[in-house]
Length: 404
Ligand code: NAP
Ligand code: MG
Image 1: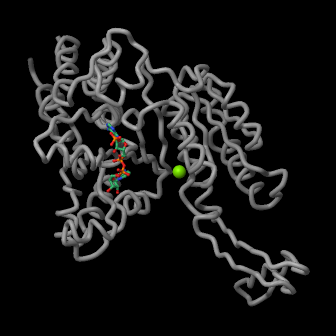
Image 2 (image 1 turned 180 degrees about the horizontal axis):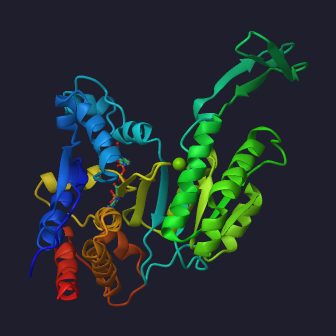
Image 3 (image 1 turned 90 degrees about the horizontal axis):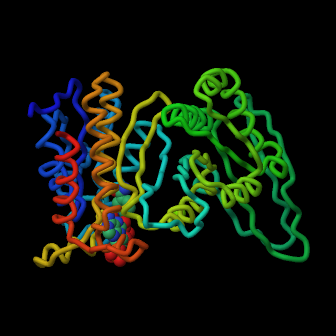
């Protein structure tokens, strides 16, 4: 059988610990037997980041910008303990943060759904994809403790030196607290375009919600920017694609999400996305089944698993113990990236391979063969727990049959 050819390189960002081990297994066992893999390889493992003074992360993000599609392995974000463990020159920043800053993207997280693993809300039949705005609000706030008798005001000085003031509160009878938040229209617009594009891409409705009735300028600006961009740039394309843009209040959105069957993208302000993504992920089951894609407003894509490097399993692996680490989210990062590369290059064979790889993976779990994290959750009667190598081998048995 002739291997599938790739026209444009895919940007490959390797990573750390258990996911680095799984990364190689996926390539060796599921990809290179079928594809003449054409990747531009960047080693984002912590050792190499340290050697290059983290330049490799910047280079990989610029390559993602150039070629349009990247696939990333989970990476360590250094903390004090990692400084010693890896003898780091500096406490390098989170690679995901660096890449997101260069691509200016929005992260979309979606669960992979399989038969036998029922969400905590059984009415959720289809994935709920959460898009979190990754700039500003309480994450870039300024706050103060205020003593009794103080007057707090918002003061803005424009470029000509003119001041405008608004009273926040006059504290009398008690000490208190204040907080200053901001956001930038350009960032909100970029967020909106990423969401509208991704909705069109995946043919799913887009929901967005804020508290605009209470926050008549701040939250209302989010609502207005989304509405204006939708009307001017996306309405016709949404109608042609048969999908909907739906705006409501955040509390109404939460109530509707709980009652829904899923199958849409839920765009969230920064804080809402932080909180709701944990709720949705937990309700759908395992971290090992959560995918993540960073989409820039100008349509560049970086695919990855939502989980980290699974450190605890890695130390077992180093001790020569077998691990049953779930590779599914990392496999879907590859299939997502290969499918997108296939679409952009009009390489139907490559896109079809991505579909088959995903089908082989889901079929394996639905046949009852799964890693430990899923074994605990699955309601299948004939379920069997296997180690990572056995699991990937079983996927390949099914993939081979699909490729015939
Ligand atoms: P983690 O790697 O996601 O793992 C947390 C726990 O979740 C694991 O110990 C494991 O539970 C379970 N788990 C996660 N993924 C799994 C999988 N594929 N299969 C089976 N179980 C899985 O998070 P962490 O331990 O907080 O972070 C470890 C390292 O990853 C840190 O250095 C952090 O900086 C990095 N990180 C990177 C990214 C990224 O690159 N996007 C994201 C998050 C964290 P049990 O141990 O109970 O089996
Ligand atoms: Mg959170």
